[in-house]
Length: 424
Ligand code: AMP
Ligand code: MG
Image 1: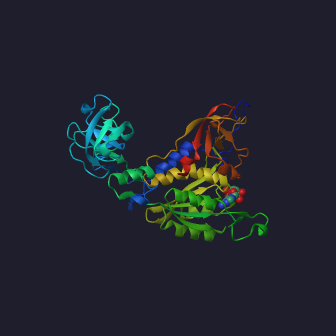
Image 2 (image 1 turned 90 degrees about the horizontal axis):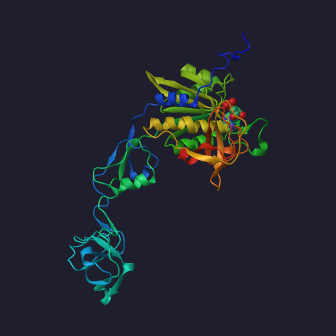
Image 3 (image 1 turned 180 degrees about the vertical axis):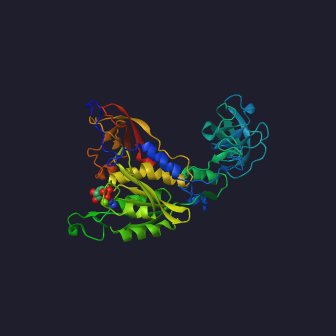
């Protein structure tokens, strides 16, 4: 071979790494929205994905109203400071007023409808009460429209206030209620079967720390994966730790395929690993082991488990290393589950931030570094970026998305994805 040629590794043994964006695009192409919907109380809609547009049948506010406690006036009557007017009515919130006679003022309170004819409110701090409230002295010259909230300034009648595919959050729930909706049509919760693999795994509570056998570790993935799934609006069947043998794995997969949209496992997807997931999923459906060009999180499996004629549950296998499991969930499983619910916004918002540290060593893979915003408006890096160190994910409040082959010098601007975006 000419020595100038790069040495190629054996493609059969070491498949080329798949760019993360390609892996995500493939997964999203396979995530056909489930199409099942539920009618839920607006109270219970937090985090759910809307299954239809919400169009307002009315305007909000319904009528012009005062945004201050004070006096409603006709500005034509108050052309100079010090004008005195008789107070002809009192309008509290929830009460309709009557038309304001020219040359008079109405005592008015925040949220009360403007009486016909009045075109401004003078706040009570700019007035002086006379004759026990029968008259008022207006100390300022009001501008037309002053302290008046216009009918429809929040929501116009016929406006689409919430959109199909949006994930409901508290403000949207309030908005829906504000136009009279006590029920909302949302996508049904994806049903996810979760299990962990690995004979080294022990459940906390089953064995006390001082009694742990050499080589045994507690199952931490099960706890954060279940919480992540629940936060994403999933109905989780936690199948626990599946024993490391073929029959048990087959039985677990087969029963999980019924009644679940996705089977999610952690561990046992590294290339060449002696494990039962791969042959078992292949026996019941199909499985692809992907080597994704990301760090942490290289090994990832996608496949399906048949449950009937032309029907199958999705299968996803996450790496066992806790940080790899955590990050691949956030970057691959999360958008997949959102798409199953018909959500339109799948990519987390990122921001440009200054690195207050340096990272002199580049990696061949795209990295997702655990980092945290500091009080100076920059980012600090967690010292140990090993995929087994879950402390990094706990310490961090976001991930730096660093392109393959790049280093970071102090002061560089990097792409930062807040964990708040990914955990919502
Ligand atoms: P694997 O992907 O199965 O090769 O596992 C990679 C590493 O992650 C090993 O050190 C495992 O012990 C560890 N691991 C696998 N599953 C879990 C789990 N559920 N909780 C904590 N660590 C795990
Ligand atoms: Mg394992």
